[in-house]
Length: 320
Length: 284
Image (cartoon, rainbow over all chains, first blue to last red; front, side, top):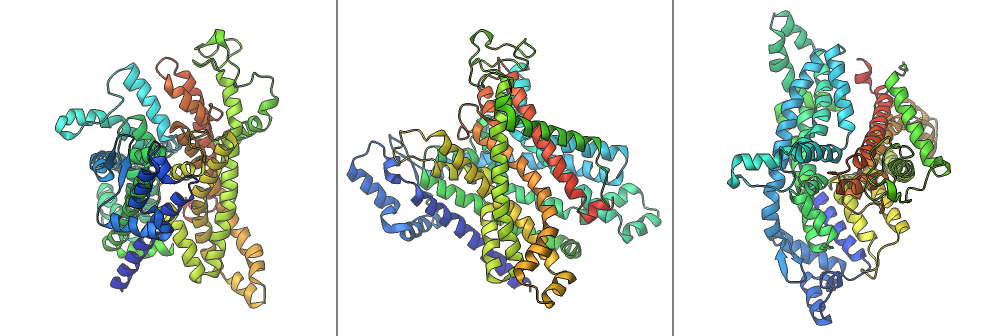
């Protein structure tokens, strides 16, 4: 049973990644101009023909895709073409990926660290003033787009108060404080929306769990509320929350384009944007393929982990 | 069963009403065109006589910019959510009703589109569709607008499609559907008479949330420089205000606040509508 389920999920993963990358390569063929002409604006016809052959564009849609796929699975993600020369996409990624990864990890940690206590507390005090204040405040903040928060932070903290640098990224090797200084504002702007959605998810599930008989049972045994909340109710209520958190991972890796642009963090999202803007179609296809692989992998991991953490809860939620 | 609306809900409806009014009748109001340059008033702060929201550093009046921007921001949002919702719910409802291989294809399509982050998808579509044969020739505005709407529509299709599919799955197993079928009702009739009326409320609720998603996506694309040019939408104004936020922050604040209010309103209404549907929340 488990094994077939596992295989099915892997097949799904492969189908999704195949469709995404194949769709992407079809899109490239849809461009009204030959990509070689865009990649080599000043090249001679011979040079362009050479490039067309190198990318595989002379082999028709299927042949081009097969060539790209062969390169992709062997770790050759293609090149970025400048007027002066070329650069491997993998070199760019080696620089951009850690930036996105740290951004994503800090954002998730901050969002969960704030959302979990808030969610548990407002479920515990459901309908009371604390719950209403938390829910309404979060509702308003969740609707504000992250770039709006980012721009206001830049203006107030960066420009007026001059507390934090507004641009650039520093690796750990430049010193921990330097590293964090450049991360605080992007992480804040990304996590505000997440805090609200995580809190709501956890609150809704906690409320459902707190109605269960075993919670009444635990309370009648005389356990303290704190113990009931954290030891008995939190774990079965947290599945939707962690599912959603994991699903956001893929999106945060490639989807933080605007924030990465505003703060010049230059992570994976920015690379995607640069590839689109510079019409680097080969790089774009590889990047989008990688992002979708990430998304689907996290998606799949969540399914398994959720099943292992509490199979009973999972069935209940599916049927609910 | 129906909850009474609270004050915030009326406020949200009111705000959207004002925005819709500006979008439709904005060009008939006695204000200057948003493209008029007020050379004498450059950088004037809010509450300057004649320019109540101030003037930005290019000399554009911010109030008329916002009134004018309502048209494009709301037009883009309504068209993409409308068309995307129609296509998505058609696919979702039929997939869940007929099941089988067709359902597999549609669900895979939804999963594929959803596995690419919204903005990446929209950006890629805009990049491909808005490329001229002569790459040095700028693309005309109407074509940028059209590609923008198409890209955002593609983003919306799977979001609403999945909701339609899930809701149809829940309803098509109900007794009255079986009863209708056993009485010899045609599939098409069952779908239009029994499934669609039941699925529609949750689609409308999520549709309101989708409007917020589209408004934000449009603004993000403008910030990245691929949206509607010349500050003709709220997103475009934010993108332009960002350039001199140090000296003229109100050129940024006003469109941000207007945009945030609009998104808060659509989200709130979507939430209220959904709250009336969801049984688990309804018990609270």
